[in-house]
Image 1 (tube, helix red, strand yellow):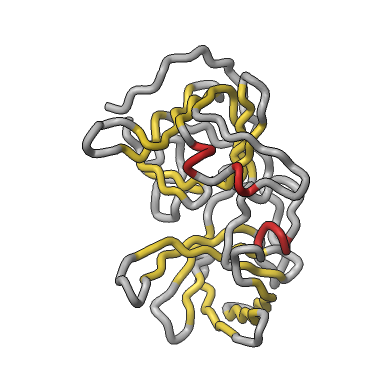
Image 2: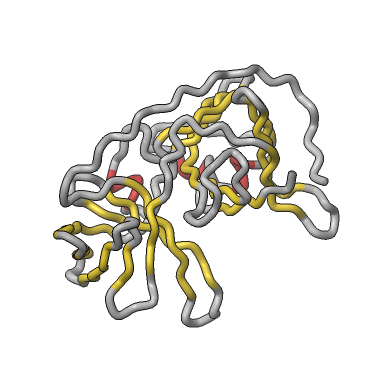
Length: 235
């Protein structure tokens, strides 16, 4: 069992935000897939983030999609960017540099790349989600959490090394000064894949968060992903 220091938490009621209707011929949100490194054979995560204005990136926004987004800074600094065109069940992506990828779009929303064993599925925006339990990466030798977060009933959280492990400090925007906390507690909300943590000692931190497609999209999820870090449920 992973143990966290017991700290007082303040309850917060989460309000579910309505999901806007998607425009015909446009995609809006984060799509999640898996990819295999041809050199090492290791399987890793893959992302496509679509904006309704026709732009797309192979990265996910570090702070989710709930707040203001600077496309070049937030999605093109580490990801490949381009434009897309969706007609019926066919999606064409034109990357900067000229390369094009073509996908078939299933009725479920899944994107399957033509000629490649690659697919992506849309993730839930998790609007108003209240999670339950503890999610962590645990050191098998010590049994202690290397990084973890516990969600309490009513909107409270307690986290350990989340800022440091996910490089939150290094993802600061120009002119913004961030200081990573070793642990903290407070209240949280989730909207459009943005998890906002309001620490009782002052800071407000935002992380991109999702539940992988195929996992239960419920408070009892088995795995969550925060800033591309997979955290399995431990309790």
